[in-house]
Length: 298
Image (cartoon, rainbow, N blue to C red; front, top):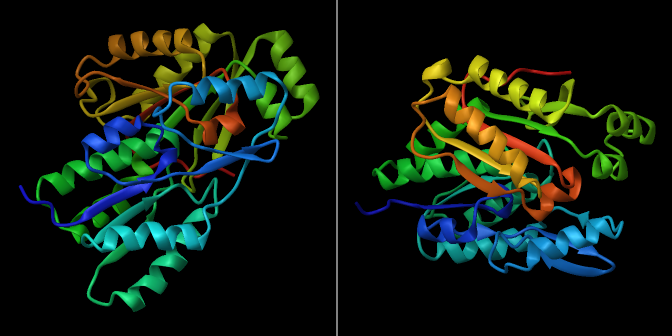
């Protein structure tokens, strides 16, 4: 079926670039800076990019991330508008102000291209949860849905994409100031894993803590059962991603497959990219799924 519009997103969807190409979804890349050198959020195109990033972290370097500016959005959007109408699903405003620059660029281009449709939506999602939302929107596009119909679905469902995760390594959280040095030290000594999720604004909230990875996996799976559409009978997409801890991700996937036997296809396993990883560091594992409305958290 002929597609009625172009769907685009940013690299923080934390899905392989090859997959985004296969779905015909143009991607705008974030970047990070270390020692004055800029690096692209690579999405797996260069097998050396992610290992290099973690070597920076191991060396104690703190990557600097920044918003995508209006000019970059203008160039990206204009290239897409030359091919058709555009729906851009942006990285959550709960973690970056880039979406405001995207909206500003869209307003400028609407004046230049009055006959073209250009819609920017704040995903309120991050990492592979953002990817799950974009992937579902691509299904709608491919089924023949209009830009307006797809945009409406995204707005109605973006806060139903749950991001449930835990971390067994507090080093980067301490370096970025998300937790104090004392709290990070105590967590390490006591083998404590904070349990986190995204709130309804797309911001990260730690709401519990447990001792040990086994308990963290159990708590994460229980949270999915509580919130997933259909509970244990959940039969839609499920994505898992991790930051350099594949064994922990494998433990979570095994537990998820046992608890939720009706998942739509296999659980998609992805790497947390360099932008999200700049803040989480290694040791984070997350699961993403469709559920009830995400809770409001103070």
